[in-house]
Image (tube, rainbow, N blue to C red; front, top):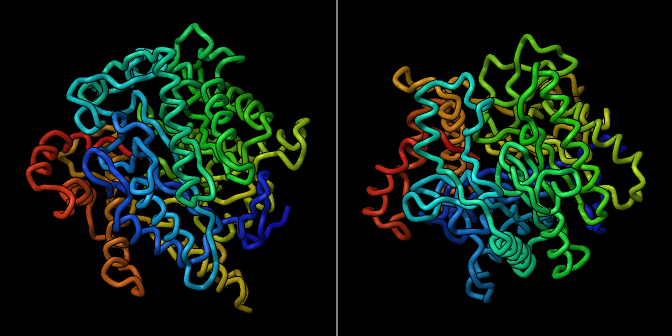
Length: 511
């Protein structure tokens, strides 16, 4: 494997990524209330990333169902694909492609359906109308998931998440067609490809997880059925897009973890099942990249580092969840060992080498030495940067400059890309100690940081974005995330009503 992060790599579909640096999906929280198309705030944000030579740029999750939003301000696939509806998406693709120096990042639209994790009030449905899911299993309802959780945490789960309605065969067909419509939107708008979000406990992950799927039909979690929903969607998409259109999948081991006698047994069983699914997915011969990630709404700390866990088997935490300052890893590429296992397994499989999907490692890549080690050790083909891309949008340009400098890399290779705001994630003493709340505080801080970048580029596209505001505390970030609105697209009375309904959700939900 070529270990230079700036060397190109070919995808199975025939497209080339100019370098290994991937700006992974980050939820922007910038669309209209109740969801809508991308707008000038998205254009401002993505124009900043587009300037700096990322190999591939993924959007935040674009919902295929307006009735299954995450935090209420999601980008949503329109019901029709006429020229007017596609125009904002076409503009976003042009922004991602439009670097002034002639470099061209690949633009990938992440498609998602929240399923049972679509919350009350802000999920796009009337109050107390249940979301759809593979089975009628509410988030956090299982006994092993409730164990050790306090009364306040249980109250939050019950307030936010209803018992979902089990999907009928017709519901499944409708959702599949919605994903196909989303892929067609991406293709017609000029995106280079899509990523299907099958991680973080969202709908596609729900179909593959025994935590959320107790069906007995052909969409059960039996080995021969577990990936059927995903395979039928991909098969339908491949029929309507060119062979050079990129299709990626985001998947994670935490969605597979249920219960066990020890953390090691739980982790090993989860890894075995997700590895089986990855083998199956790779065997289809039509997937270009697989991103390895982790975490869901039920167990946002799933993967948080435990000091008493042996270093040979660390439980890890991805960019999906913020690790606190006390949760440090000697090897900060959290999923590196599992990712290496996946790569070794795939390259020993009967799948033709040219059809083996690239592995995108996301989480914990915080210095050039981490990037180099991940490639050198064959932990990944592609290097995913999420929150560090928000702190340091020009990271590719900085790295390229450092590598071209004749000075010894020992002065900078181990230095973190940017200071992380760990301290601000600690919420006020008045906020109860609930895992979801701490995670939501971190998400809110990065969301407001992205908004600062977007506004700065709207005002002056040639200006440098403002420095990160490390004085912005966690609770201030949560309030700012929810209290902000654009008067041109969101009437103040809508804001007032929704603020009353969603302030609790603001503490707890995240991408």
